[in-house]
Image 1: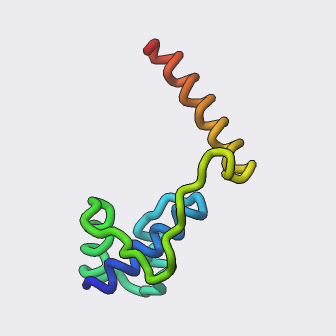
Image 2 (image 1 turned 120 degrees about the vertical axis):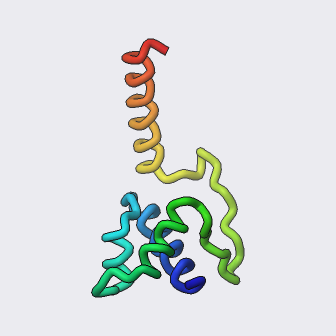
Length: 94
């Protein structure tokens, strides 16, 4: 179960890096599991609730990038998200 939980956490992290929302169907597809098993569902739910996190690998830790080091596409995405947030706040009257 622990190994399955770590696999799910790793796949979910990969999906998030690809800009996708990790769902049970996407994780199941990446695992290659043909049928829904109770262990898979339980491990997925544990990851969703935050009970399972990805254990660091033996590779050196990646340092957080400053805003100046972010690629241009990420900066553009951030600007777009901030603009949408400003619009939402304006519509809510906050």
